[in-house]
Image (tube, rainbow, N blue to C red; front, side, top):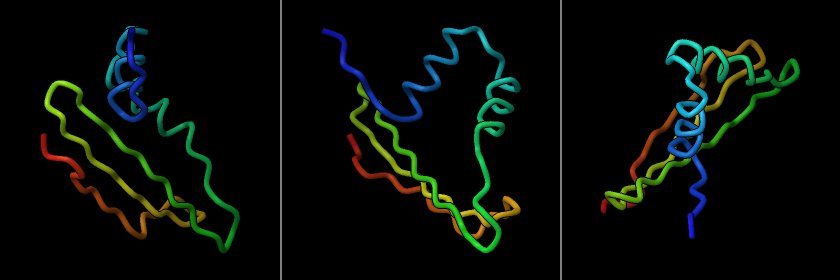
Length: 80
């Protein structure tokens, strides 16, 4: 039985299967982000897990309504 893995690894695998270049992948990911309303901030969280190594991590980014990064954090969670 194939296990679904949520996060960057699975998303990248799906994009790679579609035959997209790195440049196209980056552009598509940027185009999907929608800024918050004026005076608000948006916090995005992403995680990834590598089944082969057992390693996992999390990334958090906060942006204002212009897209300016206010805060970013990347942290390993599990060290396989």
